[in-house]
Length: 294
Image (cartoon, rainbow, N blue to C red; front, side, top):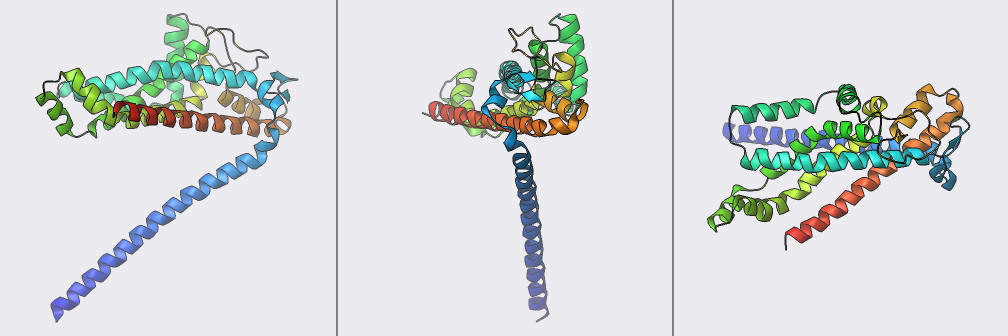
């Protein structure tokens, strides 16, 4: 009798614990969704009225209180392009080497620890380092190239870490089966590892690039300009960028109240830019998955 009572109590406690746990998880999910929806509602309600063809296709005029943000859109796209070309191939290659080729040992563990620590370094530190390396030492000047390479350094730890975790998720049996059939190391990686890990690798790369596209501190020191009424002509030119433009319009503008409406519109364009970038990466990821698995 006592044992049955104890069992019923344990069952009740386990059921109560499960109910409380699921309730806490649901509350967490709904809270995040509510905050996300409220964010989009607030941004859309205050910035959607500023969006027009003139706003997207014209250069700023009259102290950035009229006209559009075309130079900022083009500058953000070019900087993100440089960042992607630098960080994504290099980060994925480094992850492949660390996970597939490097011998397990103290040096490899130290390298991994250093990469994870670099992911937590404040972005302004990368900006100062970019000024020293790319602007002063390599003589790239304050330009799109310097800013893009600086953001590439900032993105590299994220890309390497996410890519290595994606490679680790592939079962070792896939590797052993390919090697047992006589495949070389690279053939095994290319045919049996990358097709299953590339979605996770691209996801990590896109998350890092999305973060880089919204950074202000690194580009503030390495090439972003307060106001340029023209488009950049080369990667050696200074540029306007959406995140820095938002910062100026919201905090440093001589007529903040008048420019706040345009700042919300610029923020909405930046969010749309990141969303479209992610959608493009999803399409590329799906296409590569179909191509490599057949």
